[in-house]
Amino acid sequence: MHMNPAYASAPRTDFADLRRLHARAVRDSVTLAQRVTPDDLTRQTPCSSWTLADLLAHMTAQHHGFAAAARGEGRESAHWAVRPLGTDPVGEYTAAAENVIAAFATVEGPDQAFALPEFSADRTFRAARAIGFHLIDYVVHSWDVARTLGLAYAPAPELLRAALPIARAVPDDDSRLAPGSAFRPGLTAGEDADNLEQILTALGRSPRWRCPELGADSGGVGCD
Image 1: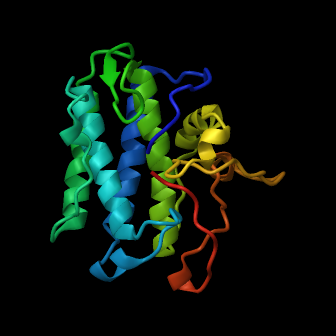
Image 2 (image 1 turned 180 degrees about the vertical axis):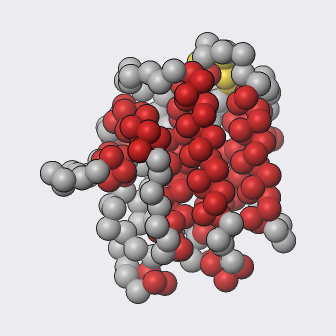
């Protein structure tokens, strides 16, 4: 995910809780990824130009990149490279997920500097902000995988409460119209929208999207 670094200030979650909720978001994505079969990998995803194989490769690379950033190695571009997954894509994804959770557990505090070259080549980010970036990415990408597979996705209410202000803080400006943008312009949530639907619409995803291979065809959204 390429995210505009000009985040507005969002309410902060206690750092220990943030790491715990981040781990939950990532492990939710692992639970969904473990339902993927080889035949599923060519399915279209809510990310309009990506198959499920492309999405898993991207998610795997981001885990490795953020883990490297937590270890002080984030400026090394090789850690962020997206590579085709091998013969065991689910195993590769699971290992990468545990790698980033373990790396985040070693972070000394919320002010530790993370180098995130995909976000900015010139500045670093506080650990708390960087972990928030990764958390919101995996709440949304878990939804992407679940929708692609036609599975339910019901994150813990406390995870969604923490994720919603992060989603709302992502600038909704012309950068969302650029090719390869992480998100499309925000959509209007219904009056009765729950927290997950508010997160999705804030980031330009339609909660009604269904995988075309499952019998419905909706326009994809930008992902990167």
